[in-house]
Length: 151
Image 1 (cartoon, one colour):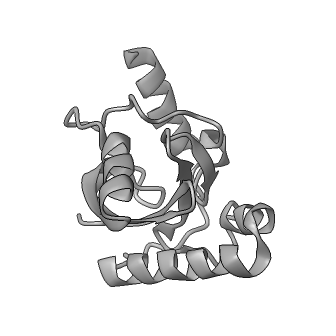
Image 2: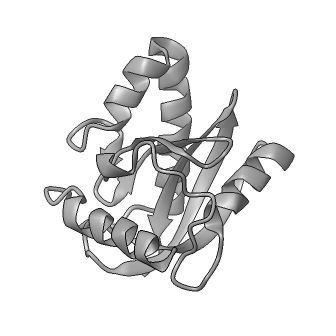
């Protein structure tokens, strides 16, 4: 398991969108990006929306903010900072403090439909593991999210 986690983290850091600006996104901007992403899914459908979310130069990546989508088993469907995570199950992945953050995504989605989850995650701009608060929203059988780094 440790090797798998190390591989995921190394992949995130190696392939994260290097062209993103150094500007820090705010929690308000992260929540607004999720709301835009949810609307985009409704307007263009899942397939086209996921393609748009996966584009590191597209309108769903802003500085260190990016949209991600997971199914209700916490398997990545779309990821604006790292396409290598698509298809990867994150349910049993722990952050740097040992927190099963993706399990919390699922729990919040199932109980509240939307909310905030805090955890540590590699920042695609700084290349460091940083504190992050992600706003997630359940859409059908998916979790649409975006997080703002706190450091």
